[in-house]
Image (cartoon, rainbow, N blue to C red):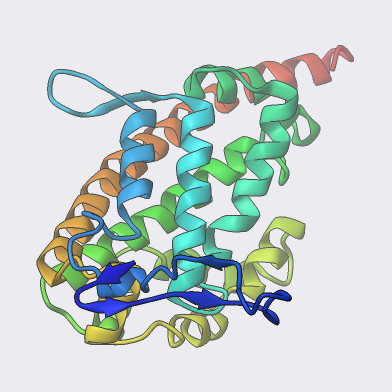
Length: 275
């Protein structure tokens, strides 16, 4: 078979008794075929997250399709694994918590799922989230997804990776990590887990992300699609990540309010020996 004037065959093993080989066409590397594909590695993540999001007339997320959302997060962790060593740790722990909760309490609607799970917080008298709950995972997915949305938006605007990481961190995770470190000596297991991924560990991991053109090449994937398309995907992921994280934060506030109501009733019941 000819490819751009080159006759290519693949020979494997010794010839038969007649001096002939079984042969098959040798495929050229995908990266050599400009335009063979039309998207980078972020496109499947964007598509899955958009599929999960239910929007109102103002394009704000009103709910998520649970299974599609988890698939979108899973796809994102695979991309983050390509980007740098342990970068996907920011999402994998909480993704596993969501999966375990979904197996017990899951609903097609993300909102209904988290509401269905609320009774698990009774173990603390509704004063705080159960560590293994979807509510706890929801909060940290919201925080970490917002970090990546900010970082990718800055990268699309032309910032170098290290600058994008530091600016996005200062806007999103810095206050949360600082609070956790201050509470480490007296908090429960949830905070001890988070302390491991505190400031020093965080920046050690983020330092694995390549800078500039190297990062864009990673996000381009195996096919030459061009820098402009990679930047467009960065912008799209930043947008959908921001919209979804906004919704996750709203869900967190709703659950906190419901827990506060139940805490009052729990304390009344406890006072009368009914808890």
